[in-house]
Every structure is written in C-alpha cells, then in structure tokens.
Image (cartoon, rainbow, N blue to C red; front, side, top):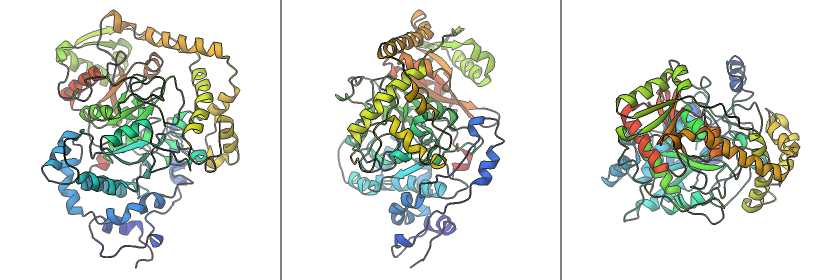
Length: 553
C-alpha cells in the first residue's frame, strides 16, 4: 500500500498502468498546494490592470477533494485506449462522436473517462492547470454505464459529458457561484439541468467562474473566484484574459475537457469567454431558456446558454436545454428549427448583414472576415453605429439583485444551517469577517447595491428606457431588413442584453500574439435557429478555430 502517490507518479504512471489493488484514498495525495507568489508578482507587469492578480490558487479548495472520488477508475484508463480514442473525440462534433459509439469504437463510459483523463492530466499539475474545474460529479461513471445499457432512439445529447458553470444548480454537487458564502450550498437540479438529464446528457462537473457572475467588485480579474481560484486561458496562461463571467465554461471547452459547457450571461458573460477562448457561444433571447435554479444577478437580463467547440454542438446543446418553465415568468415554449439548424447552413448569398464602419477601420480580423463573407456572396450593409448611452445600467442590476438573490436563497437552498446568508447585506457582512480570503479585490458592487436608493417607479422607467436604447442601437436591422448585425467578441453585448436580443459568437481568427478573436452575430428576438444557420455557414467558410497548442496531446 502506498503511503503517498505524488503528482510526478500520477503523471507518469496512473494514466497508463492498471493497478491490481485499490489505493486507500486517505493515503493518496494527488495535488499539493504551492506558493503562487512568483506568479502573482509576475502578473504585476501585465499591461491590463484586470490581469494583475492577487492570487492564483484558491485558498479554500483542496483539489484532492475534487479528484480523489473518481481516482481509482480514472487511473485504470489506459494510455493505449486514450490514444486510440483521441482522433475520434478530440475536436470532433457530437454527431461524429455518436457515430463512433454506434460503430462500437468506444462506449459512453469510455468517453467520460477520456475527458476525465484530460482533466486529471492538465488540472493537477500546477504549471498546466487552468483552475477551471471546481467540482466533479462522483456518480458520472455509474450514470454512463447505465446509458450504455439503454437501447432505442435518443436525443443527440444522450451520453455527452457536459460541464456546468458553478452558478447552475445540480443535485450531485454544491452550487457556489464561486463565493465562500455559498460554498456549502446544496440544491436540487436547475430546470435546464432537468432538461439535460431527461435527454440523457451526463453532467460531468462544475466549471469555475468570475465570482457572483462578475458582479462583486469593479476591478476583479475575469475568471477569479474565492472558491475556485484564478482561471487561466489555455491559449496563453496569464498572457490572455479568460473573459468573464463564464470563464471556466469557456476555458474547459477550449481545452477539450468536455463536449461542451453551459454558461450564463447578463451582459457579455457568454460572449466574452467564448470569444477569448475560441469557442462558439450563444446568448439566447431572454425567456428561451429557464433561469430557475441559477444564482441570479438580474431576472430582467439573465439567461443561460451553450458554449461548444463548433456550431453543430451548440445547436444540439441549446435544443437539449429548451423547455417552458412555469416557475420562470419570462419562459416561453420551445422554438422550432434549432436542433436541425446545423444540417442546412444559411446560403451566404441570401444573407443581409450589418457591418460597423468603425470596427472595419480598427480591426483587421473583422475587416478580413467581412471581406470573406462579401466575396462568398453575402450582402454587406455598412453603417456607422449611433453613440447611444445605456444610462443607469448598474441601477437595473442593483435593484434586480437586491430582490432576486434573497428569492433564490429562499427557494433553492436546501440546508439553511450550511448557508447562513439571506440577502446581499448578509453576504457583505460575511465577507467583511475575512476580506483577504473572501473578497481580496473588494466588494464594491455589492456595497453599491446596498447604497442604491432608486425608487420602484424610477426603476421601472430605467428598465423601459434601457430596452428602448438597446433596440434603437439595432434599429438598422428593421430598417434594412438585416439577418444580423456583426460585432466583435462582446463589444456590443450591453446593447443586445437590454434589447433582449440573441447573439452567437464564432471564432474568426487569432491576433499576431495568438490571442483568439471572434465574430459575433446579433439577431432579432427568437431568431436563434437562423443565427445558428448563419454561424454554421461562417464556420464552414473559415474553419478558424484551432485547438490550444499546449492542450492538444
């Protein structure tokens, strides 16, 4: 019996060698905390203030607690099996993976082990970890074996391992929103998780996020949480921003840790990390997907959405999340055409696309992407966007969260002794007890919620005015009968948010530094199927996405 199994042995031996006896988990050390002070010091030179880190590794999360429950089974997954599966899984879309399974090349259990193998290989060493996996579902392999025994026709998401942003409730794991105040928050499945499970999706684990979905402090780095640590970008650890707040959903998908992930967006939180990590992210029309069981910022603007390596998988995952939820006042009946959107890409010559002149002038990747579309037959309508202010945007978020967070805590928290906060004020006071560990970057936004004295009448006017402002910004869509307006990354996410318009971002290339950049298509309400067909046509035209070089083995 080994006294300790240290990381060096893990990397050299556990992947390729079957063990004849089980290891006593109390004696196993897969991961050891390290001194991150040199990395923190190096980040002080970063030109971006939001990438000057105060910590890298979490001060409260022991990765052994995350990785030990599945260790025995993952350690017996052979390197030979991994190498055989790699060309059939890595960067492949869901239909291709399902075809390999149908042909008997591997099973759903093998597929889960393939992704776990990658997670253990890259996330345990401190020099390669992206700090992107915050929890693993201890039952996932049992669930996969049950799916392997089932016969019949299934939704394409059946058996596909999916990661969830850790503000989305699921019964197998805690739901923390990255906050120590919610570190022991046990919930039932969120409505969208129920939809996934009903169709046979496998919930692989939880992904790190910008704490409280990036609504805690003004200068927080994207992708940091007190629970999960500082998430990093696989295209350049500590060189490139992860985007936020669905940082872990973006980085884990880019690194091929799962088929895809579910993120959430209030304003840019799917579009930003998808773009920064060269994956496809779709922010739906408000109401297309339920928000029940998701830690909120704003019941006006919040929505979950799919994040995947390609448009095909995005359509499949989005369809699997659909369903009308009687508990969500904005929830609507599922719209048609999403699941099959990838099969028939929109004809390029039929597209009418709005292009912003100022972006053409300042961004060469955007200009090149537009020219490719033009040469392929798309009708390009150039315009100068109006300078429209989004006045009192933070007020909308403040007053929504002041009401929505207590409502979430009352409805979703199963153990009131484990989660002792009941509202924003309680969270602020809880964090003050240990600011260095709980809020090292401060909690100015939460304090702003408490200080906001806006009346209910003014609040309603602000919401109405913001929606009008957002829709005025995109009025060219109606005036010119456009299919979509083209943006970059999350540049115009705020306008799309308050207008409640959907958007899809698709990789369009890489800057000379290697930093990813994406083309974002913003469409009319409930035009998701059309946006997916447009996105698929652009993806087929460019094939821009490349796997991160350091995570391709």
